[in-house]
Amino acid sequence: MSELPKARVATTSLAGCFGCHMAILDMDERLIDLMSHVEIDRSPLTDIKRFTRRCDIGIIEGGCCNEENVHVLQDFRKNCDVLIGIGQCAIMGGLPAMRNAIMHSDEPLRECLEEAYITGRNIRNKTHNVPNDPALPLLLDQVYPCSQVVKMDVQIPGCAPEGDLIYDTLAKLLAGRFRGFEPDRVRFD
Amino acid sequence: MSGFTFTIDGAEISAEEGQTIMEAADAAGVYIPRLCDHEGLRHQGGCRVCTVKANGRSASSCTEPAAPGLAVESETPHINKLRRDLVEMLFHEGNHLCPICEASGNCELQAMAYRLDMTEPTKFPYLEPCRAVDASHPDIALDTNRCISCGRCIRASQDVDGKGIFGYVGRGIHRHVAVNAPALSDTDATVADFAISPEVCPVGCIIRKRQGFERPIGEREFDKAVIGAEIERKRDE
Ligand code: SF4
Ligand code: SF4
Ligand code: SF4
Ligand code: FES
Image (cartoon, rainbow over all chains, first blue to last red; front, side):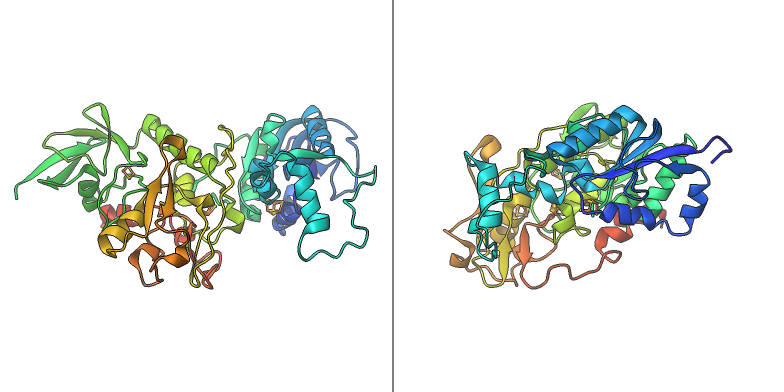
């Protein structure tokens, strides 16, 4: 890494479990080194909710399962030079995409929600309703990988990717030396 | 039997009459990617992941005989791209959620994706088929959402176990592997069958109950080495 001005980084969790953000923290003490080269803008780590200005790198965890995810992802694409997807959820939908394969009926979303909230065997939902608070973002028909919504520049595989892999990839990107992953370091889990 | 030589990517390989390109390559410590071929089973030549160019013509190296003077190309960017496309299509044809799969870390399809540099399985549409799990058998479950139709279980059951528990049904893109009975519990399958052993199914489709996630992350087969490393090690020795 060089003595250039600090890179501005934003992060977000879409349809993910926050495991990938935990994996970012898994960089351990190297975070201190990394923080001397980057500044964090909009991110759950800083609790900044809107971009304060344009960022060099946007890090996306999770795919798109509702309309809010799509809006946030588009906002990241608009405000970041390089978009990095981390984890299988961002790359191919991940565990939330399990619902895609059961959705072959005429009204798949209704069936899915009814089973989850009303008819499923072990459900204790006293209201017998599917949650419909207007504050809840509308669900999409399926869960989409980020790259089906916007152009993604780099995607770091794993569930979650190892802290080492995230660190090495970010360090190489900041130094302009990223040339893909070594096969023995790629993991889909 | 008379021996002869041919070349793979310019390196001289010795072979015996009757050996396939892949068998000769294995013996010489040159790994050619493969999914449907497995030691101890008859060759099927179905998955085409082992495709090479033999004297400029595409051939599946697990079925193509080695021949004196044959010039084989294997590790070229073009051929590896074809192999990667095949592996990608297998991911998109079934439902592969590695993070929750018992086979993860020991799975040949996943390991092949790593080896062939498939980090973004997003070029083709996901077919997301709807396939029921057959958990009827007390000791074995079948989750064909992960089946790649390699036919290894079919050949193992038929040729080694002498049972014929599995078979292909349907044609074209609808062809898939099924049990030769209404459900697995209606067959005489047991966990002692070669067809049910962990080495036969390359993915996480044939599951031995109560044995899932036995090896922790870091100690699984392909955590330690890239697929094919075992064969390539022979070359260094
Ligand atoms: S990839 Fe895994 S760790 Fe990351 S958000 Fe998805 S489920 Fe969580
Ligand atoms: S069978 Fe292999 S590729 Fe498919 S989900 Fe399981 S580990 Fe992944
Ligand atoms: S069940 Fe396993 S061994 Fe049998 S065809 Fe499918 S992937 Fe191959
Ligand atoms: S390994 Fe040769 S065709 Fe499958």
